[in-house]
Length: 204
Image (tube, helix red, strand yellow):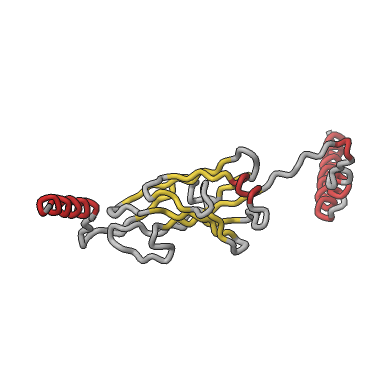
C-alpha cells in the first residue's frame, strides 16, 4: 500500500514539474504578430454567402503558451463581436489562425448585426486585454483594422432603374462656371492663332 502510494505521489510530482515552464528573468515580453490581413492598410470584407474571413498570426518570444486565446472585433459603433466559429471568440491557445463565417454570424445575430464600419481586431490570452507586459507571456494585440460591407442587390433595367447622374450628366458638367471659362479661353487662343496665320499668309 505504502509503495503504491509513494509511486503515485512521484508520478503526480513528475507530471506537475513537466507542466511548469521556467521563464528567465531576462526574458522579453512575448508578442503576437498579425500575418493576415496586412496591418498597414484597412482590409474590406464582404458579408455574403461563402465569404470566409481569415485572420492569421505568429508568436515571438512566447515561452508560456496561452491556455486559450480570445479573438474579437471592436467596431466603430462601440460594439464588440466574437470572432471565429464559436459564440465566445475563444480558441485554442496555440492556434495561429481563425476562420470566421461572417454571413452565418450575421444570419444568426439579427438583433446585433455586424456593422458596415471599420473594426479593430483584438487578440489576447487568458489574462485579458488589460494584461501588462511580462517576460515570456503573450502581449495583447490590436494592430489590424478591417471593415465590412454588404453588396447591393442587382436591380434589372426592366424594373425601372435609372442612372441619377447619367441623364443630365453632360449638360450639368457644361454648366459649371470653370468649364465655361476653360472653353472660352480655348476659343480665344484658337481664334487669335487663326488670325495670326491669316495675317502671315497675306504678308507673303
